[in-house]
Image 1 (cartoon, one colour):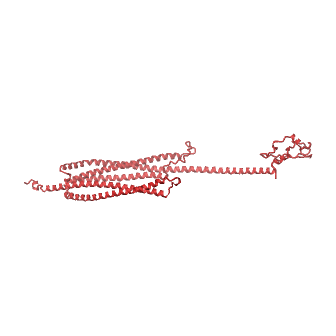
Image 2 (cartoon, one colour; image 1 turned 90 degrees about the horizontal axis):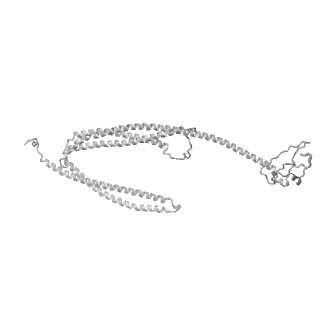
Image 3 (cartoon, helix red, strand yellow; image 1 turned 90 degrees about the vertical axis):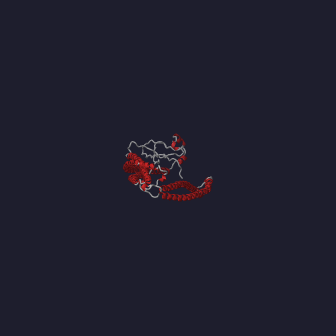
Length: 479
C-alpha cells in the first residue's frame, strides 16, 4: 500500500565528499537546520490539487564548486507519506494523455462530420431551391396553357352572345309585326260577338276566326317565350362570361406572382424572413381541383355556347313556323266544322263522367288524409319515448356518459322516426294539395257542365229557329 503525497525534490547526501556540495559541512537533518529554511508552500501536509514538476539535476564534475541551495526537508517525515507516488504520477499523465487523445479524436470526427453535413445540406438546399424553381416554371407553363384556353373560350362566348342578341331582336320584331293581323282577327270576332253568348259560334267562319285569333296569340306567345328563353340564356352566358373573366384575371395575377417568385434569387433585394408562413394553410385548392376549376368553367362555357346554338336554331324554326301558321290560318278561315250540337253533347257527357271520377277520387283522398293523420299521431309517442330515453341518458355521470350501442340505436331510432314523420307530413301536405286541386277541378267541371248544358239548349233552339229559314227562291227575291 502506498501513501499519497508529494515526492522528494532533493536527495540527502550524508557525509559523502563527492556530492553536489563538497566544501560545505554535512547538512544536519535536525529540527534546527530546518528552522533556517522556512518550508515552502508546496510542502503542506494536505494533498496538492496539481502534480508537481520534477527537475532533474545533472551530476557535478569533480573539483568544481556549484552553488546549490540546501536540501529542504519537511519538518516531519510523516508528511512525506501524504505525497503522490510515482505510479500515481505516471497514471495521471496516462489518463491525461488518453483523455486529450479521445477529445482530439472526438473533435476531429465532429469537424469531419460537420464539414460533411454542411456539404450535404448545401447540396440539399441547392437541389430543393432548383426543384422549387423547376416546379414554379412548370406551374407558370400550366397557367399559360389555361390562360390561352380561357382566352379562346371567352372570345367564342362573346361572339355567341352577339349572335344570340341579334336573334332576340328578330323575335321581338316578329312579335310586334304579328300584332296587326291579330288585331284584324279580334275586330272580326268583336263584330260577331253582337250575337248572344260565345257558344253560339257554331259556324265555320266563327270557329276559324277563333282558331285564327288563338293561333296568332299562340304564335305571338311562342315568339315572346323564345325571346325570354334567349334573355335567360344571355343571362347565363354573361354569368359564364363573368366566371371566365374572373378566372382569367386570377390566372393573370397568379402568373405575375409566380413569375416574380420564379425570378427571385438569393441575391435579390426584396427577400425577407416570414416566420411561420410554412405553417399557414390558407390554400383554397390542390392542383387537381385547380385545373378542374378552369376546366369546369370552360366546360360550362362550351355547354352554354351549345345551348345558345340550339336556341338560335329553335328561334329560326319558330320564326318560319309562326309565319307559315299565320298564313295557313288566314287562308282557311271560312272552312266548315261538324255538328256543334253533337260535339257539345259529347263534351257534356265526358265532363259528367269525369265529374263522377273526380267525386270518387275526392272521397278516396279524404280517406287517405284521415289515415295519414292517424299514422302521424301514432308515430309521435314512439318519438317521445326515444327522445326521452336519449335525454335521460345524457345525465349519466362522468365516464358512464358513453357512446354505447343503446345510444347509437336511440339516435338511429330518433332520426328514422323524424324521417318517417317528415315523409308522412309531406305526403299529408301533398294529399291536401291534391284534395284542393280536385276540389278546384270539381268546381271547374261543374261550371263547364253548366256552360255546356246552357250552350246545348241554346244551340238546340237555334236549330229549331233555322227550320223557318227563308227558302232559296225567297232569298233570291222570288215571291
